[in-house]
Length: 103
Image (cartoon, rainbow, N blue to C red; front, side):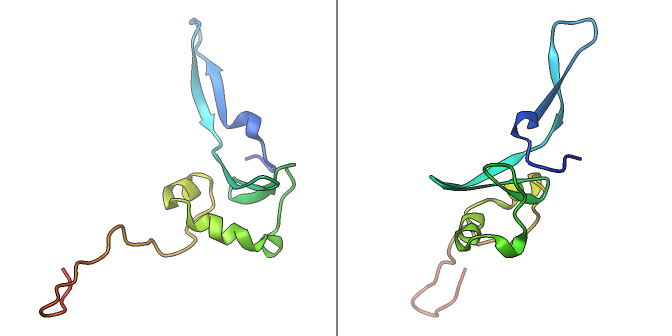
């Protein structure tokens, strides 16, 4: 497993013996959060600065949690970050005016 941010090896290709083709042998997904000068990456379950330095969880900026909430759990899990909150409902429950019941 890699120890730091490595965007050059997100997809590791291997040549198929006897052919002129390559196949994806490994993946190391990375997720980019933020914009402008405020950019952090998640890879292998760790958070990194744009320069590749590991950022400990107690040093993460306030905006990071807000950006995490925008990510799907599948994307976070693919980058090794795990579950960060309870999944949000995909639709609001329908409330009827008569009885006030939900469906």
